[in-house]
Image 1 (cartoon, rainbow, N blue to C red):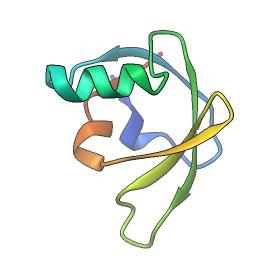
Image 2: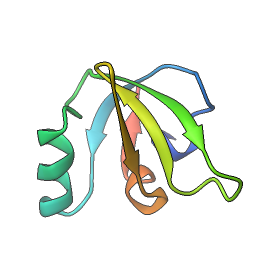
Image 3: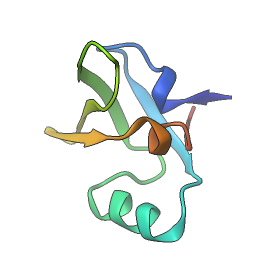
Image 4: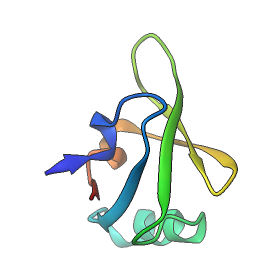
Length: 73
């Protein structure tokens, strides 16, 4: 299973499933993270947490513990 936290910088991934708790899942879905959406890691700090991802032309930051629960195709 490939998860968002393992996706290399500048490599495209497509969301398959979000397994976060309902409040986090709803917030991510409101930001555009829905099944089939293209997501690209763009920035990370030296500790690799959190990371910034490009989704539909916008950068958002997702914590590692949440990115671990987002499965990709």
